[in-house]
Picture 1 (spheres, one colour):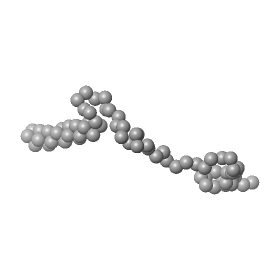
Picture 2: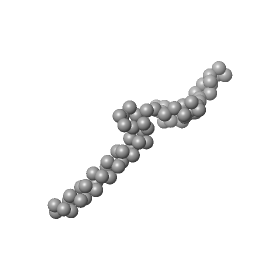
Picture 3: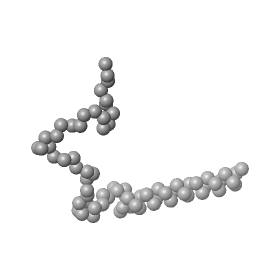
Picture 4: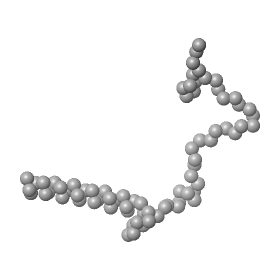
Length: 74
């Protein structure tokens, strides 16, 4: 008794009839989708890039404060 091959690409190829559409690749964004940028919804920030820079800058400040206080109170 043999076990059927269940790995990807193994076994028999799918039955193809001429009526089935060919599989499509990844979604290609349209020009309108590329131009549209979602607003972050965070007060004081117009873009997601601004939010990311603020979070990164806050992280750097916290790390610098930890280094300064650990040196001062060690």
